[in-house]
Amino acid sequence: MIELYTAGTPNGKKISIMLEELGIPYTVHPIDFGKTEQKEEWYLKINPNGRIPAIIDKDNGDFPVFESGAIMIYLAEKTGKLLSKDPKERSITIQWLMFQMAGVGPMQGQANHFIKYAPEKIPYAMKRYVDETMRLYSVLERRLKESEYLAGKELSIADIATWTWVKARSFIELSIDEFPHLKAWEEKLGNRPAFIKGSEIPKKN
Image 1 (cartoon, rainbow, N blue to C red):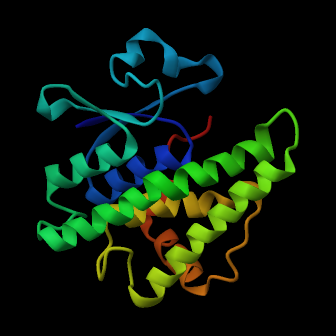
Image 2: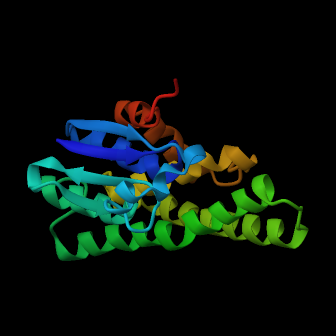
């Protein structure tokens, strides 16, 4: 049993989708950003960084894991799924996972911030982060033109991690019509039952 602490963000949805793909039983604990629950002392004992997502593995001595990429690697290793044991294939998967963690997530996240939340509109910042997000999408397009999935012929943690962010582009109305392979990949994964169900976690009241 996994205890999942999450919210309805791309990073949070990574883990619920993965848990659905793996078929692991889990209990959802929604974190209320409005009440800054993620900064409360009880939660900081689970995730010292005060962010979501985080998990507690009840089957492993109440072991806590934080940071979405680290959680995904942990769950993949725990189950032997979505991350190859072959050293080269494993490395390719982790490379694309890190591409999302260090590139797509942070850059698109900054685009989200400056377009939707910044107290003043800063054209340079908005253009800077949108342009970089689109450049990263072009990298994904090139990869998916030659490969069915990011790490090769099979779905992996890299696909799940990246899909949640590409899907969230609608938040700032980014179009991927110029990237047909990326668009087809997004639609194909979006039709998987685990992606559909996991994307609804946590459910809105």
